[in-house]
Image (tube, rainbow over all chains, first blue to last red; front, top):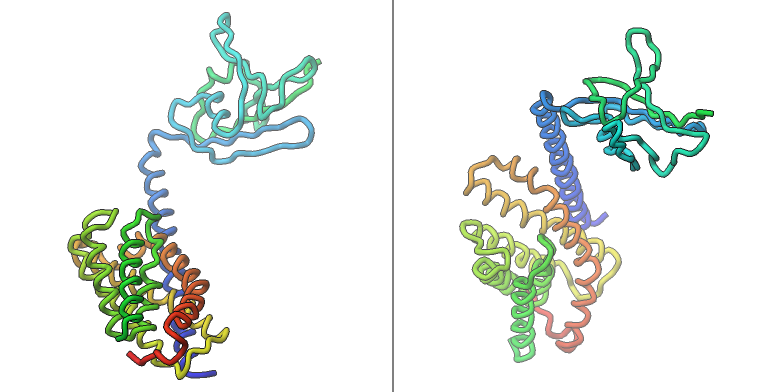
Length: 148
Length: 178
């Protein structure tokens, strides 16, 4: 290979290495920054796990979802899915009508359950999703269930 | 220089300054290509002169604001690109481009854009305190955009521009070693 081509190819190599290292450094810096921010906001945030079971075999998990302190289950679900809900004055609470376009109907209904870590089972909680505050590390499931 | 060369150089200079001062996405510019081209066409001295002049004017009138202390570094960086164009020209016996030349020009465009960014980053570090590595890493995405856009410009525009100007100047007879 010609000497001049070797020189120019090494220019190209230097450029590629320089760019590769600096862009990797940039993303590493961003990552470290995000970790620091996460630490900083640890006192005012919660990590929770949300599962959506569509009742047809499709189950989606949203593990380690970061939410602000004081977020209820409804707001948390709205972070990860499109939720349609109705406010019931009588109960002073919202009910969930649909999640991601899957609507309640006469036979199926969205219910939610929390994972009980002590007895290692799912359990129903008879509260509106907007009235249930999630705690650190909690796991909750939305399940599209047959009710009749 | 004959009248045609002077005219062409004036047009390139005006074009270069005009484009440089036109609002555009950050770090996408045509100056490097035109300065390298000028160095290649008219020799090292013109390349350096045009690079320095364009960055000087740009430093004062840029849509991004007055360059301030970074101006000498911009001038140096662009002058080096002009110099590189002139030096590259000296490696040619006659102007007959091949695929190998296309590869060379593309890589040179990428490399000297990087040199320019390195120099201005070094200037920034020198003037404003953070260490050079931090400046390089913080500006990495800007450098990436700059290098990629210039690489494409050099790859697609340099050889066609030289061919056009070669015709304008009347073939190979006017080519000089700067």
